[in-house]
Picture 1: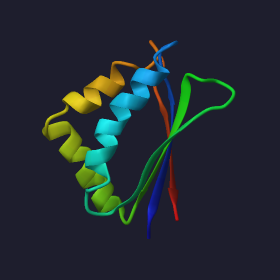
Picture 2 (picture 1 turned 180 degrees about the vertical axis):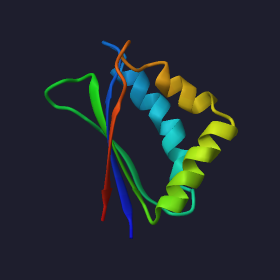
Picture 3 (picture 1 turned 30 degrees about the vertical axis):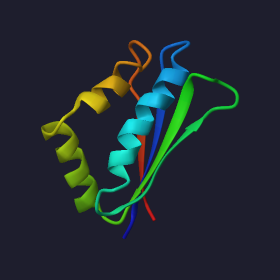
Length: 98
């Protein structure tokens, strides 16, 4: 069964353009991973500093592998994204079976 993550990410005020650019680097690598069916970023039309990341993976096992690779590999692209998050706010992750 496929797994969908819906992640709402508030970024620091005025950093939306930088966030989009940094995301592109991560997206290029992630979309080549086994099991990744979607890894797409959407910007709110009402709040320019709020984004939603839609991820779809063929299985929980492959999501787990993706997360482990982010933590153990070269994390500088992911760290560049995290550095642009709004201070004191943690992204909200919702998980769904498809």
